[in-house]
Image (cartoon, rainbow, N blue to C red; front, side):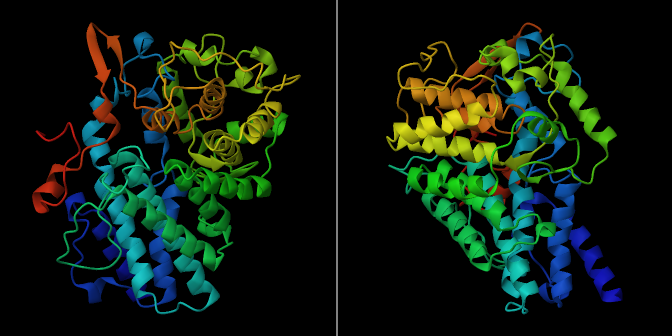
Amino acid sequence: MRRFGLYIMVLLLIGQTSCSRYLDVKDKSEVVPKTAEEFSAILHTRLNNIEQASEYAFFGAYLNTLPFEFYTDNMDANLTISERDIPEYVGSDINSLSGKFGSLYEVIKDCNIVLHELKERDTEFGKKLLATAYTMRAVCYYNLMRNFCEPYDKTRAGEQLGVPLVDKFDMEGKPDRASLKATADFIIHDLKEALKLNQTDKQYLFYADVTNAYLARTYFWTQEWDLAASTAKEVLDAYPLIRGDAYREMLQSEVERKGNELIRSGTKQSEAYTRLYMQRSKQRPVSLDLVKLFTEKERDIRYTFFFDEQFLNTKMLKTSVRAAEMCLIMAESYAHAGDETNALRYLNHLRENRISDYVPYTAQNLPEVNTDALVKVDATGKALTPLMSAILNERRKELYLEFDRWYELKRNGSPVMWWGLSGVKYETAKFMYLFPIPKTDIALNSGLIQNPGYEGL
């Protein structure tokens, strides 16, 4: 027990080191644990942070879910009610967003300790630890890919910049940025390795169904439409959509995971803490462009509790993975693959669970594309069709305030947007959808090429 306590203290000290030292692992023999229980403590430190909603970069927390909504067109920045504790736009937070880079590699370091040093690999307990570490490492790289890399382009992914791939201890190692394709392949490999181990203990949060959901997300981000649809279907079949009061209770639950949420942050936080951050969401009204997408008004259950009559947010603030996203992945993936029948099927499947007396969409009655909308092209750069526009609009409604819209804007053209506040024009330029690599890391490793637009920082 004494050695175990000393190890926890060492872990805490490691966590307080500079983010620029994410590859620096010294005195390996003194840091690496010996027993499976001690390896488990590494993972549970991170898992507990998720449950406390304090893991800033890895899975999301109240602190950063809300700013990411403020960066987008879901909140009307031109009508800011209060400027306290909210960013004007993404450029206001660019330094802290850069810090996600080192924070994610700190978690990757912990995962690598488990994956490469754990001796108890063939027991059920050992397999559980390995599977969790594989998924956690994959989730970190998935976040690195979405935050620090260009949107995936299958035609040139081998030339696009990815991130450094660190999969083992190397005190002298200074890896260059891998290609974006290599980064995506690494994520997919880790997720598949985790699935082979079939980790089903939900106390470790990243159990097999969550792993499969991240695999669907990764295939979706990398435009592997057939694989995205089939993988998302496996998750949706296991976690069917819910409706009515059960749906409302799931979304409005402050700390308890309910319904078809696979994983969420903040399950060990207090309700008062959640409410504090939720109140900050009222500092800007919901954009009227978003409100107008709810054409069925009160017949759409989301319209009745996402915002009030003054269009101020009333939806609970959280970060989670839930089944509706899988349904939307399927609809869009089928659309990209040219399967209009199944695309409409899953688009209507979501709508029938949200809208009373809903009218199913057909190829003939889809709404026209709004040419004034911010998003004008899909993930492949093609002009929006009525079907694709309807799917993207449904996603915007369903996943409002769930840490999604920023990445949807990035994925679908990275549109330039701006607003005025106190006589100042704030513009989110295209390059700002990629966060800068920290200067301290680039100073230590010339192979870390800076993202475009930040070279002079």
